[in-house]
Length: 164
Ligand SMILES: O=P(O)(O)OC[C@H]1O[C@H](OP(=O)(O)OP(=O)(O)O)[C@H](O)[C@@H]1O
Image 1 (tube, rainbow, N blue to C red):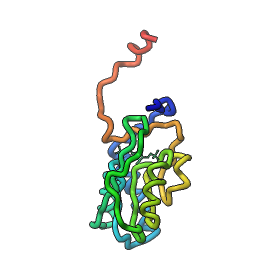
Image 2: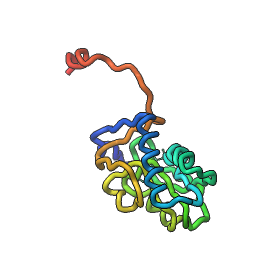
Image 3: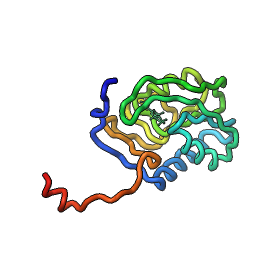
Image 4: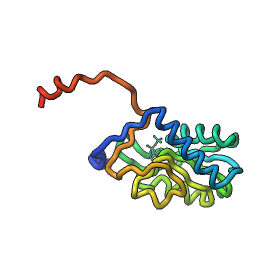
């Protein structure tokens, strides 16, 4: 497998609080566009938490998943659809946490062409494939989601400086 981790130069850490705030901002935006969405299709796994927050805010109880496996840490391997859905998506929301290269979205959108595709974060390469998103992040940034990280001790700067 080609190591593509060097395409990420910066890291953008997202806290649970920020994720919640950004997902609620997306819910507001989606409510402005339509009041009675039929349901949500979440793209696993990253779309699951945003989908839960949006479902709560928009009072949506009908939730399905399309299950896709791709990244291993920062390396995008072969995309495989583990569970598909038979739904044109008309009147439905298709939710993911982010669109990066747009490859995942490309496959899922072909499967569910009429759904409204919404993500919280979008990078330039994937941006054209999203209908609604909240925050644009540069292509060379790795978005560090709260479920992929934890708070831990870091050494004081003064100690790090003496090692340089
Ligand atoms: O636009 P792309 O380059 O296709 O990348 C975006 C996809 O990558 C992430 O999922 P990931 O593959 O990390 O799987 P996970 O959500 O199960 O962790 C994210 O949740 C998107 O589905």
